[in-house]
Amino acid sequence: QQQVKQSPQSLIVQKGGISIINCAYENTAFDYFPWYQQFPGKGPALLIAIRPDVSEKKEGRFTISFNKSAKQFSLHIMDSQPGDSATYFCAASRGSARQLTFGSGTQLTVLP
Amino acid sequence: DAEITQSPRHKITETGRQVTLACHQTWNHNNMFWYRQDLGHGLRLIHYSYGVQDTNKGEVSDGYSVSRSNTEDLPLTLESAASSQTSVYFCASREGSGDTQYFGPGTRLTVL
Image 1: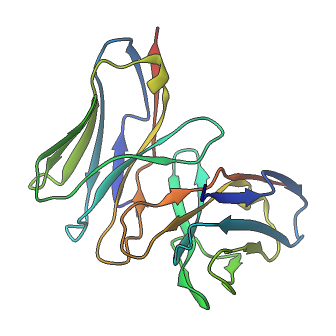
Image 2 (image 1 turned 120 degrees about the vertical axis):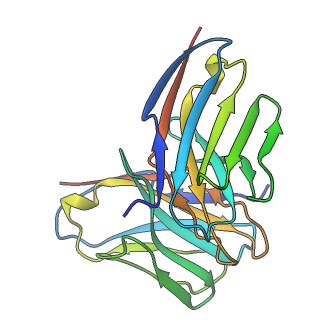
């Protein structure tokens, strides 16, 4: 049973455009929601994360929007660049154990 | 610099053989994790450890085992490799009180 559903599976955006990736979760006990970025041949790396006590977190061109009532969160990449082309994973965890449950990933391609 | 390494980076083996994938981290993190990454499934947790002599099963643990004899290493063993275990395997570590998991570069395993 997939507890974190991610969409779309792939996304193509023009340079300078906005990339939006969405995730939905089922377990209301989740209390930490990170996004990981993965380049080909590399391991995932933390990009940005949010806790459910805030509705939005911004770091540079990357913003997480969080809707606790809808159990949804999304990643917005403003002014998308070709260097942002990568696979993005949302994830969720709960409690002190911090075991991550990942979404299925979104392959983002930013065209020059 | 502290880091997390995996070896080998690529491995081809035959069905039925025992395979061990190595993971070594120099951060002195207590928490270590093994994931497999398959298209359409994101990263799925195989096993994890919260310290020396501690091991726990994850979502997809059948056919895999781990042992933790020191803080730095968490080897993953496939007792009798199956074609369904062809995948990319990632090791990760996290410090005890932190949220961020740091991933290794991955091992691509092919079981023929």
